[in-house]
Length: 287
Image 1 (cartoon, rainbow, N blue to C red):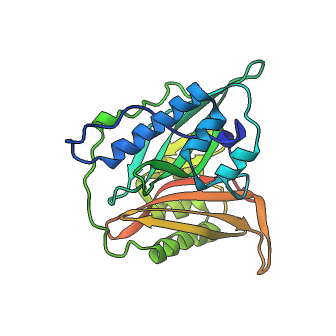
Image 2: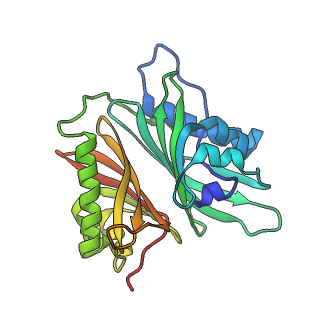
């Protein structure tokens, strides 16, 4: 179960009021403000009520396999302690209705050591205009010093654009499968050099997020994709896509390995899908 969900059972976003109606639409800023609002609601009302409010009813988390996050939260007791978080990086589709928010999270429980981690949430704009999280996962790591800077919604810019040619679900699934196959054949270090955006973010338990192809390749040196990594879901809007899936043991009829699941964020840039964020619930190591 991811570190954010384990603290309540989940974790994610929130803050601020939306801009005046006369201002140009800025879905990136609106999504980030919702992230701050989510965090503020957790501090004010409690973590479980906040998650039930801001998670979409069909949202997914790792528990450790892909699981309905809203149902898991509803069926689990609220926990003592506090969780604080804020977004340090966000990305929204050119269509303005699907995006990523990620940043540090801090967990405090009386009588226990403080815990630190990073959340990673995918948000979708609902029919009523509200943003709700459709995917929520995270990693645990040590304290960061200095702490990452929080995003300022007032400084975020958005320009609407048509979906680029070739940016569809079929091509995203092909890119996801190709990355998994390259990782199985040559290891994650080589695969990420081939598929990743230059500012790729890599999330693994035990390490704060690594940003950039070279640092990511160094972190993943020796990490192999043991088994078959199968795409369970692919979602696309404009130039933004996300995928998640599980690792299956070698063999045609093998079942998924319960501890191994992944989520990836993709952006269609320069005519192809490029990996923007790679999160694995557990690092597979070479035997």
